[in-house]
Length: 214
View (cartoon, rainbow, N blue to C red):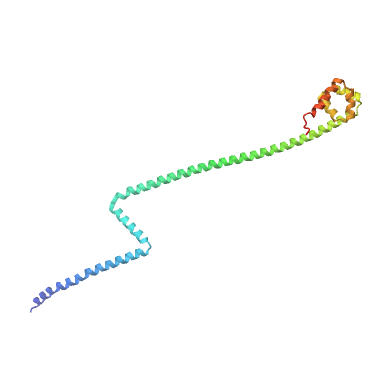
């Protein structure tokens, strides 16, 4: 057999061996990809859900990329909604601040008014106490003056005192006679005119007419 015939014989035998070798590699590659996929899934599950979220984000990114410009209007609309909500929140915050300021001003005005009322009440109380003290002093002074004047009338001669009492108002004269000792008052009454003595007696009797007896 020549060299040419030997080479042809080798070429005929070579293809079946190569087909056998290449046919065995394809199943091996599929098994390797399956193992890699299982390992990846196991790793994602071990991330306690982070892998699932990452997978969703990747899917969303892929879907957005595939859809082209369809996701841009959604993003713009979401940003506009967020801006509107923020604007409404800012307006509400400004309104609340305005109401809080008005309430603070009102509370301050009420506090000032309350302080003024307390000061006025304190001043009024002090004035009332001062007036009472003044009236008490005036009453004491008037009482002292009436006592001294009554003593003067008592020490006068009955005839001179009677002439003086004739010129007095019956109410005024009755007041002095009521403060005198009975003996001095009787002497003065005896020196008065009958009409004057009668009028003063009526006044003296009528002063205690409304006093309850029981």
